[in-house]
Picture 1: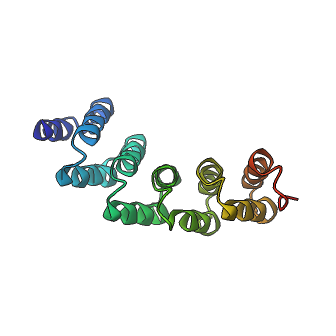
Picture 2: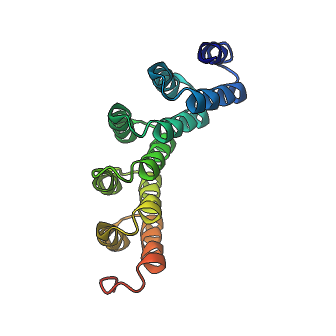
Picture 3: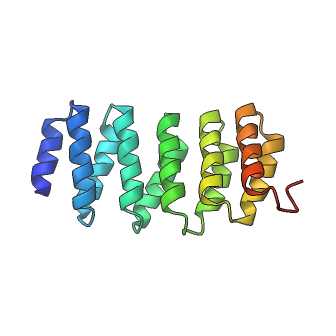
Length: 173
């Protein structure tokens, strides 16, 4: 079945809806097969359709949470990929699927500061509030971004996060 799915994907490489269906089937049903991971990585880096690439990156983050190679590879791509939508998709996948990794929060905070793209910064703010609102470092990061970020949308998201989740915290004001 896996070989059929991979063959199907290769045959339909220009039809995004077929590809999406086949990729979902592979990711869900053959995630324990290392060839599936490698094939999905290949699709993620070679597919021209950005929406499909984002979907594959999210699938890799969702389905391979116990694979340190995938974590390192996704982090590297989230820093280096030229397309901000792809970087945002990877950040979303990492934040929601690697919460228990002790380095994820620090890495997200670094992305909020180091990535100069406003959409990536906004995504990081959203993911911090969504996935790390119970961590004391999130309060500190939100306060910093609310007052120091150059982008008004990022500042607004940080303020909204403070108001929604830290309104009763003594260090909020």
